[in-house]
Image (cartoon, rainbow, N blue to C red; front, side, top):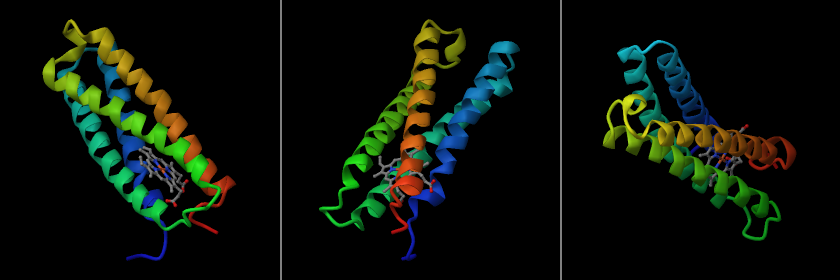
Length: 141
Ligand code: HEM
C-alpha cells in the first residue's frame, strides 16, 4: 500500500463529474439537445460511482488515525456531508432511471431540486475536507 492518503487522489473525480453533469443539464435547459442530456446522465452515474470509491478509500485513510485523535470530530462532520452527497447524487441517478428524460417528465422539479441540493452538499463536503487537510493537517501530521 502507498504510505500516503489515497482519498485526496480520488475525490476530484466525483466533484468534477457531478459539476459536469450540472453543466450539461444547464446546457439542455438552454437548448434541448439529446446528446447533452445523455452526457449529463453518464456524468451523474460516474460521479456517484467515483463518490462511492472516494468514500471507501476515505474510510481506509481515516482508519490510520489514532482512535483518540481530537480531529475525529471534524472528520465526522465531513463524513456526514460526504454521505449526504452520496445519497443525493444516488437519488439523481435513480430519478433518471425511473423517469427517463427527467427534464420533460412530471418529476422535473424534484430532479432539479435534488441536483441543486447535491451541489450545495458537495461544496460543503469539499470545504470541510480541505479544512481537514490544510487546517488540521489530517493525512500530513
Ligand atoms: C463518506 C466517507 C468519507 C470519509 C471517511 C472521508 C474522509 C476524509 C479524510 C480522512 C480526509 C483527510 C485526508 C485524508 O487523510 O485522506 C478527507 C479529505 C477530503 N475529502 Fe473526504 N471523506 C469521505 C467522503 C468524501 C466525499 C464523498 C467527498 C467529495 C465528493 C470528499 C471530499 C474530500 C476533499 C475535497 C478532501 C480534501 C482533500 C485535499 O484537499 O487534499 N470526501 N476526507
